[in-house]
Length: 231
Image 1 (spheres, rainbow, N blue to C red):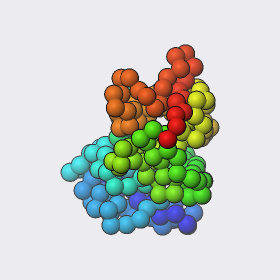
Image 2: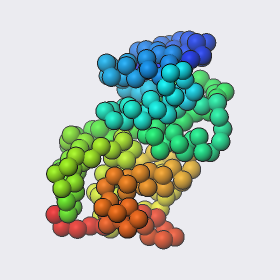
Image 3: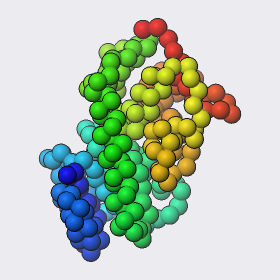
Image 4: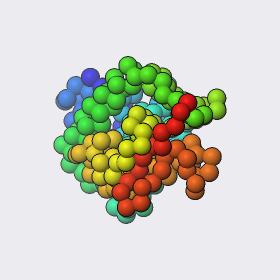
């Protein structure tokens, strides 16, 4: 079964999550502060990380940002704060999903299963796919690498999946609702702003001028598309 890292400074919460996941045959590691969490992600291969927002030594957002420098492991943020800004910030820092405390452990396990299933399917598809080139952009599905003019660009898991989907369907416009369901899944609880956040972050990484994009374009009032071009 999958290996999960649970990170929270509230030991009772960690104990409860760990017990419940182990009942479903997950292998569970734990960490109680941000620095310990980061060390464990660097040292081990996890299938998913449950990461609390408010942690000693390093915040969950900082931990997530650091993880995205070297890993695309799926991250679910756990937060006691319900404000939209906290949720959006978590997604901007590379989180794949968020759950607001207090939560039902059944919801946590359901979210984990959805993300693991989607992650497995995406990796399987990427492993058999070709290299796609468009202008100076080169997307290597086999190795999940993106280079632009020979320079490697680090993308989060969701940024890569979004770009991979759009570049595989050039010049076809997809609404925010379509992309939310296709990339995040129809059971994803977030709203269409999730797509806008990821498109903006993607443009900041791949566009020569993010305010005047040449790759990922907006069809006003409709959605987003990748402009096809010859390699």
